[in-house]
Length: 437
Image: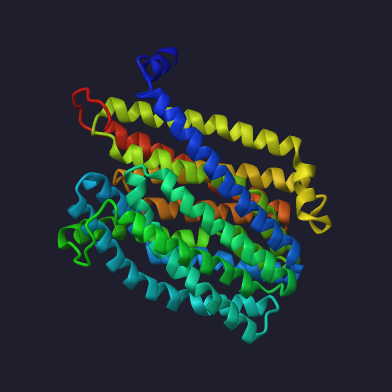
C-alpha cells in the first residue's frame, strides 16, 4: 500500500500553483455566490408555495430534468469529447458545436412527446386540475429549450477555461430568477410562475452564452458528417443509459409519488433544496476538473495519477459535507420552516446518498469526457438489479426508507463507474512521459 501511494504522489507537482490558486479562488467565490442566490431562490419557493403547490413543483422539476436527459442522450458529453480534441481550432470547434445543435433539435422533439403526457398525468394525480397541469407543462418548455442550448454553449468557454466570463453570466441569470420569484410568488404562489421565472432567466443567459462562445469559434450552421458520426457512436452507447437515468435519476421522487403521500413528495423536494449545496461542488468539478481531464494527453501514468488524486479529493470532501450536516442538521431544517422540522436524521441520510451520487456522477463524467462509455448491456442490468433489490429490502413508502434506498443504489453506481475508470486506464497503451496541456 505504501509503495502504491508513493507511486501516485511521488514527483507530483501542480503546474503553475499560483495560477491554480487564483483560478480556484475566483471560480470558487463566484460559484459560491451563484449557489447562495440559487439556494435563496429555493428557500423562497419552499416558503412561498403551499405544501400542495410545492409537491407539484417537485414533480414538474423532476420530469423537466428527465426531459433534458432524454433530449441530450449523451450529446453534450459527446460534444465535449470531440471538442476536447480540436479546442484550439476555431473552425473545427465551431463545426462540432453546430453538429451538436443539429442533433439536439431532433432529440428535443421526441423528449417532449414522451414526457408531456406523463407530466400531465402525475400532476393531475397529485391534485392539480387539468387546466393547471397544462399550464405547468407549457411553462416548462421555455426553460427546457433554453437549457438544452445553454449546456452546449457552455462547452466552448469551459474548454478554453474562460470561467470568469461564464460565471458572470450565471450570477446575473440567477439574480434575475430570484428577483422574479420574490416579486411574483409573494403575491401569486403558483407552480407555473416559478417555472416561468427559471425559463425567462435562462433565455437571457443563452443570448449572452451565445455571444461568449462565438469569441472562440467560427460561427457556422454547417454540421460535419464526420463529427456527427463520432457523436452518434457515443450517443448509441449513452442513450440506453440516458433512458435508464430518466427512471433512476429521480427514483426517490417517482417511488414516493406513487407509494407515498403528497406531503411526502413535498418533504423530499424541500430537503433536496438543502442538498443543493452539493451542486456547488458538481459545477466546480464540471468547470475545472472534467475539461482538464479531457485535455490530458494520452499518457497512462499521468492519467492514472490524476484519476486517483481526484478520487482522494472526493472522499475527503464527502467526509466534510456529511460531518457538517451531522453537526448543523437542526439549523439547516430551521431554514425550511416548521413544516419540515424534526427531519434531522432524514437530512443526514439524504446528504450521504446525494454525495455518493455526486461521487458516481463525477466519475461518469471523467470517463465520458475521454470517450470511455460503459456498454449499456452491462451498466443498465447492474443498475436495474440494484433498484429491484433495493425496493425489496427497504420500505420505499416512507421518507427514511426512500433515503436509505437512495444510498444503496448510488453506492452501486459509484463502484461501477470508479471500477470502469480504472479498467480503461489500465488498458491504455504505454506512452512516453509527457506534460499535460
